Length: 262
Image (cartoon, rainbow, N blue to C red; front, side):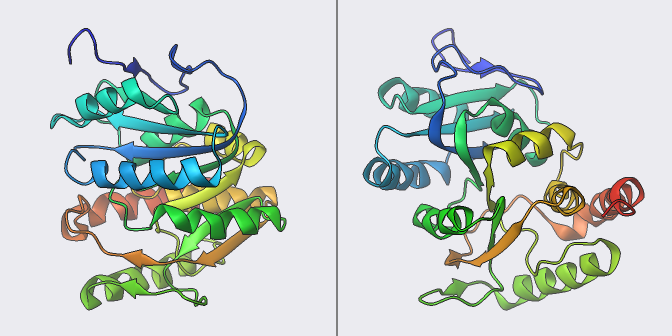
């Protein structure tokens, strides 16, 4: 990793890095990253352009490196050296996407906090749609590939779309989640909601979104599902054929622990 790597190694709960004092700001973007050296750079470039124009001097970007071995950490460290709003937080070992998002959310200082997948499938400009929902009264605003909206297009392989639809239907039969797309990796929270939900969450893998939504429902948070533009990006690390047992086990853990509360 090198002695000059600007990386705060963190476990959960994290401590804000020394390169970014805990001064409140308007907006925090959290990006969980595991071996994203190819897909992350173009997304970070578009993020910097958009946020610098949309909310200059009022945002932070936290990349949570989840034990990458492909140079992701080194790339983000170099970027952070010349982009003051960018922070790098590191897990020494891979802990899972949910753990990485939790670390970032609890290290963030923004009044509004968004996590976005590192592949950039949801363009960063779509944050404005979610921010509008928050300003209209929602505590949590989740991006959806299934809610129609003006000017919105989605590009996805039909088979993956069918798998996603089937998974969503299956989940609604087991968990009290009244939304159509639980898994889109683009979700926004008011500060208070983020801090409570992520402090209570326990899931570290793929099903962490489900846990958050069940918790939000049980705690009475207002959740808005917002249609967004979305394009499938090659390189997904989730393979349902190999992971379905872990996913099913996670769903049953959530149902057993939280299902009766909602």
